[in-house]
Length: 416
Ligand code: GLY
Image (cartoon, rainbow, N blue to C red; front, side, top):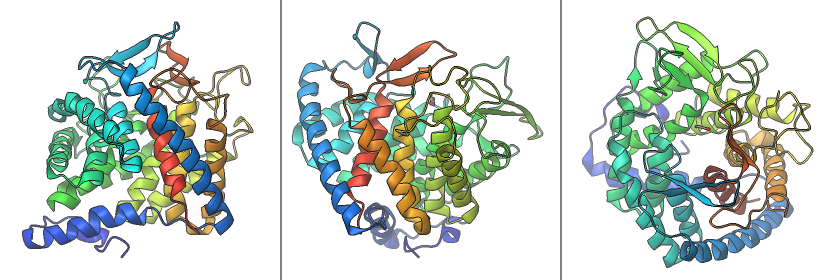
């Protein structure tokens, strides 16, 4: 087995062998992290990736070091976007985006070992930590796993592992076994009884990792069932995904298939497709269940065969936006997609070259002047938060930067 333990061992059992735990931590936490770096591609491609991502990451590290001196530390406003006048907008730790800035700093520290970036990452992460107890949201993966999951992978400090474990326990309280899914939102109760959004696939990694470190299989089982339920109900015949599927919490019946941030209920919201691709590829990493891999492949093929995908592979905010080509792009969707494609390339090795080429093209374009942002602390412009909500339209947004950096680091590890 790639991870030294079969997925079925993680499933349906509570594993409590403390003596073996240290060994398992190495096999299950460090080894996959290193294993992630094995991509199959030609040596030429590998060399080019290494050089271009190294150049770009070095640039971003220099930028980030400069930016942390400019951006005042304020525990009530964590960088999220810029307003129309170019002023920084921060959000409190409760916001779903609060983990991205510290998570981004951790990633850059992990790559560079730059001590200033580490100190800043620690400072901003501390602001977010209390969110591990907030059971009123499903966004615990974004908020807690992005900073503390990276912190743990990089430092192996158990205190970060414990933060993730607490957040996983909190997230598990939102699981309803009748529905077979984690409830996403508590808001919009007048519209949806039990909304589950495709974005929620991004929270599963923290649950899978929680089983690995705790030997408690309940996290794994919840994550796997959530993915299974999403697979059954979120996808259309063409493999595009609905944004919101709402269930009857008493019977588990599907009540509505809607959008919240997309153009229409039947359209394909770009970031939603990206969350699905990334989420199913990652779920396959832990479960080795081929239906999850198949779904990730189908989503990738949907995206990259779409007639409305521009030549530079940076999508419009919705694949069915009504005024294409006069519609805003969503760079965040492109960044999440690129990172998800590198993950996918590990698992579907037959088609790895194709996925890597798509991801490389996305990154090459994001690295260009057209998409690079000069305003601290953002690296990329032209993302979209929500067009129906009328916020963050054609703006730099911190989660685009987080997944861009993750994708560049993954690209730098592509090996022949
Ligand atoms: N998870 C919220 C978003 O993607 O905008």
